[in-house]
Length: 260
Image 1 (spheres, rainbow, N blue to C red):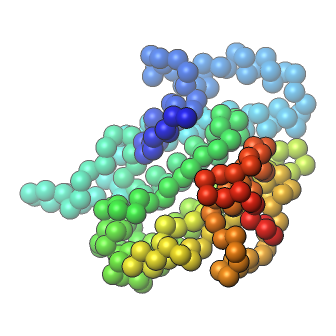
Image 2 (cartoon, one colour):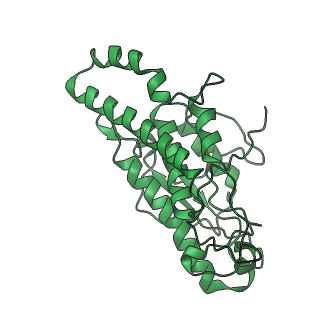
């Protein structure tokens, strides 16, 4: 096993997924495969040809947004003063506008699934110890601080994170895969690292979304608080089953979570 490092820069995340050659900064991905794409498109049905055209367009559109992101400086409540800015200026390639940043990262993840560049991805909407200030929500303090002392602001921030998850699911539900959708064929687990600001971690809410290829049935609330097998690793065994990986055990669990 080798670790997979967190990538926070959209441009590098995109490059790692879709670029396989060096020294191609002057060429768009779409341009480099255009001839092969035209040859393939002639062999497709009318419906598949339209879907393929939409895919090429989405690659082109995301590349354009990444390129523009490195040039935009005034967005995201970044307000310089005569002596210093009120927050550090974001690095090149990361949109200063946080909603646009997360929309872009979500779109890159969706594109990776559509192209089968990966079948497993982790999206972390905010680091627990983050000092990012979500000024676009009217919040003045950083995430770590409000998680411990400002419950009303934390609710507002969590609603923003949930809206990013809703956007991800909505987009995936619009992408057809045969008679189903990308969301139907995907299992999404959304969770938090603590229930309250005092680091309570014994009763964490976990949300499962998508259809997992027909294995996951939504619209239910399952309570395992007093159940004997109440391990996250038991749930992970279910998730791996749905992905085609059958294991006898995973970490501290040897049985699947019943009823999922």
